[in-house]
Image 1 (tube, rainbow, N blue to C red):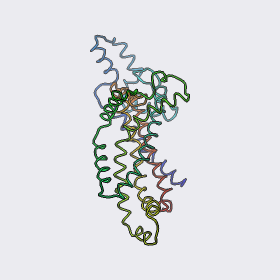
Image 2 (image 1 turned 90 degrees about the vertical axis):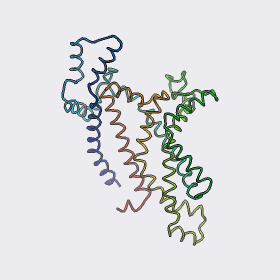
Image 3 (image 1 turned 45 degrees about the horizontal axis):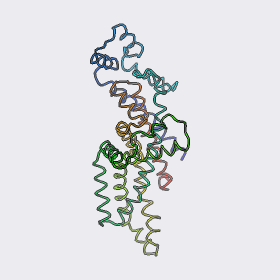
Image 4 (image 1 turned 30 degrees about the vertical axis):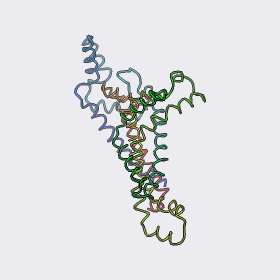
Length: 328
């Protein structure tokens, strides 16, 4: 297993290099740069910058250098010094800007994954066992409906209903009096009373997809000869179901963790903007609009790291769940 994990980590290195190059190039593709965007904003509001100030800022941020020089400066600082650069717009180190919000993003992603898996597996099992029943048709309809509804629309509708008809505080992860308060039991309870809505909104699309995957996988397994043999030996249906076909059906489901984790994070970006969540989502949108390349590149790089981590975790879980993979 250690050799297996080491190989996976080794393969992650060229993947990260390729992702960092592509992300940096994509950020540079729009015409102009951060200073061009800044001057356009100032011109629209009636302001301006002197040529000397623009030249000094361009030299300070390294925007007067070729793109490959800018990329190497950024990547070498990350690798050798753990420095993600300076946010042009906020004039602060990128690490200071993102670390405070990154914790909430990871926590939200972890809670969403737990919510999705806790519901997708039993619902998928029930739908497969009762194939072509009213329950199965109802689950199928809801799954396709949830897949079709955009996250931001679901967030807006949920916030409107909870605020208008139930008088609940929506938006953000804390009530106003707990935003800057120290952690305590009342603050934790306030966090839990707010976080369930974004968790449900972010996870609803992934939940619908995993329910369909679990149903399809289990239907493939329950008609296999080994299930018929176990049933003929007198094993109870519940024990038979959980001991054999469900275990086999979980393997493809575990492999989806590699794309579910980044999908949750990307969904969090859109929902965070709509629901005013203190996560990295609004930061990334703001950085992309202003062409703040070091801040945007660092956030995209971190999302890519989550993809690689999700794939590694799914590989390890597959090796634990399936002895055939360990033997290979």
